[in-house]
Image (cartoon, rainbow, N blue to C red; front, side, top):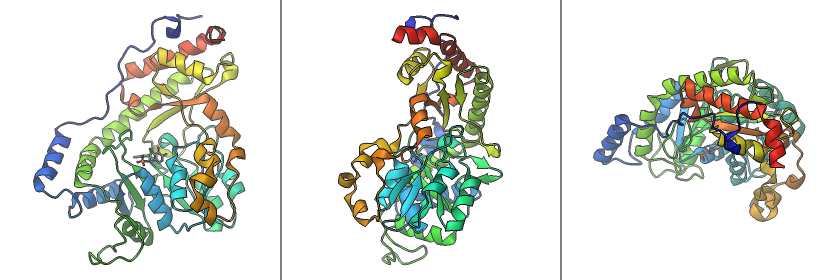
Length: 412
Ligand SMILES: Cc1ncc(COP(=O)(O)O)c(C=O)c1O
């Protein structure tokens, strides 16, 4: 047995402090002041367009369309790739609600397919099982910036002409085999909400290499106007999903730190992977072998109760936090949320349009179920810490594993 666990009044393993977030300096102050003093705060400004182009260029994409947030980015992208009311869209259940609620808001039906245990991302085999003649899109979520199996998904989707809309809310700066996430499917949807690696408080963006998808997405986000069209010319049903010049200015400033932060987070992930390789019972999310760069938004882990005296999640998490290990609890399966189990009442318009609605209360995704009971993650801000901090975190996990018997015995 090693040193006393902090949860039993021992000394916490982590003594270094967690980096603060958001990060800003004179770059943000100057950029915001410029917008303020210019008097051009919104619609007629050029910063938003400039940022969308810069972001597209950074990811080697043809086009970028800025929108109010990541949820709207998914909704607009779905409509732009041709998802129609009543269509089915396959999504993973281990994700933030927006991946699936954006589908409902497009009047389409979310169909859940399970994830892979190691990658924690959508399993192409599970997707294949859910395809029907009503499936028009699949939304892989690159959980924590880890690329989903896009190659496998393309093999499954292409023969059926099913669009791939990548949920890149957590994948800023992730590249797979020389291509940026968000540019491999038909469209990629990013979020600039305050916890995200590139942060404007709120904001979203769609990347695409397809001229038609771009035009459609731009129009939907700009009250149905046409790029290069007249101001009062409205071709499609759109809304006002624009952001302000202030947000674009903040984003331009945040981007100046992107490379240095990417590098720091990757370095921390290397230290964690190395350290946890020696901790039997705690397993990090697997790496995609073809990852060229990974924009870590999360560092997901799962513990193995069989190796940790049968510990349950609440006990494990409490012990970890007492050690100062900043681990969060992870997602619950989306299909078990009331939004889905009570779908008839919560989304009647979709139910009316759909040919069939899944029996959400009885969806079976065993990998997701297990992960929701044994998984968690550390946020990107943790990964901005120095090596000493990250090594202390590894020591915290080691301590819990070494003392698992006592932890479980005393919790009983
Ligand atoms: C996987 C995922 N998809 C979509 C979103 C939605 O983004 P937003 O909060 O900007 O609407 C988020 C973020 O919150 C997310 O984590």
